[in-house]
Length: 491
Ligand code: PMP
Image (tube, rainbow, N blue to C red; front, side, top):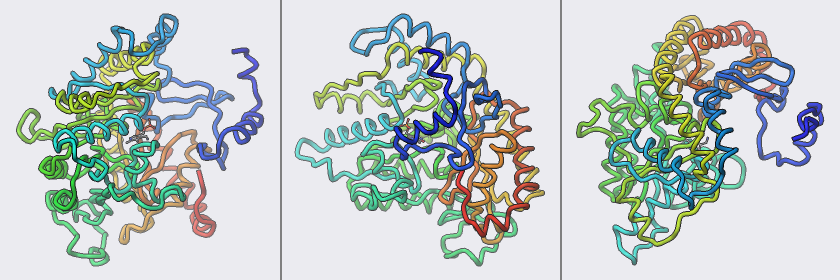
């Protein structure tokens, strides 16, 4: 492109954007000064004025922004060939094998797609095909139910939007959940319907809990209570799929209590349905101690209790920024789909360029020991946050694993009133004053989510927590009363 394309005044870019790109496509920090990013490296983004930002939110640039080895692999391949999978090319076959090798043995059939939404959409199709095969030709698959978790997000296509309870409350497009989608409570043991006593702050007044019956003494009790919603659905309805993230991101970094998944999967299998593990955000070692979030509570890998999904979907980090995603399943489920006789063709999916990015990403992930780094830096972050929590009333809960951490901010440790406006303010000030990019999630938008590229270092972690501390203990008190008066400060 002529250099002229890049030399545009920010106001002109903003003007063109708002005139020609739909306002439904959101812009971060829209009201407080949107960012004009020119390039990035490791866990840093640099704007057009040369200002560097620490990136604690980009879970796509898994091995870091602009990783030289991945850039080299992509640029070489762009110059060689860019076609679809109807021609044979070693990259696609090799990448499918490498992906399958990272998963439990039974998962050995791969479908490549371009995005997490496409992956989940196809996974739901596979589950439907499998159910049809089990039930015979007269079975009406449209009546089969899919169980999803409250406040989950699985994509932007029609089928995945339906399955995204988080979106049902947003705007007017979907105001009712379609009948075949069954939403069960999110297994949140901090502020969910069944919270665990020990995960709540000592100051928490249990008598304030809506229903003491729902209050749990142990993790196992919470797991049983939350799983019972899935069990009831499976008894009442013809279930074809249970779609869940092993670590729920948009819901505010929720890792389900131990044995929750095991109980749910057993119930779903008994009903003839399939367990789909959405690993779009959490896959490829982000949780540090495990490669996949569905393995998080496995105590006995290879044992009878090992969690093994029927279908796994991956996306975001797979191509380190290139549109590369996949669905991985068992030969038996794949053959149910194949027996329908419909060709699966996806124009851009698994082009040699995308696959080169995927192969390079997997190589860097392993050669730079990034899963181990996620574990190490994640533990360090939790240590730093815990120390800060002892001096700061705002921090209600710290949870997560590896570089998938949520810090929930509350106004009151007794009532757990969510500090929604304050969280939004902290996010803005971190960007404006401290040059740190963060993200906020959770049903009450009061959870700071830390999910940086896995090259995030201990020094990055220390820098982030010291900026976070200043934002909470110096900047927030100065505007606290005004915030309550004006309401939410949009980021
Ligand atoms: N699943 C999960 C858990 C996600 O977080 C997302 C995107 N945030 C998707 C699916 C959809 O992925 P994509 O945006 O690549 O379509």
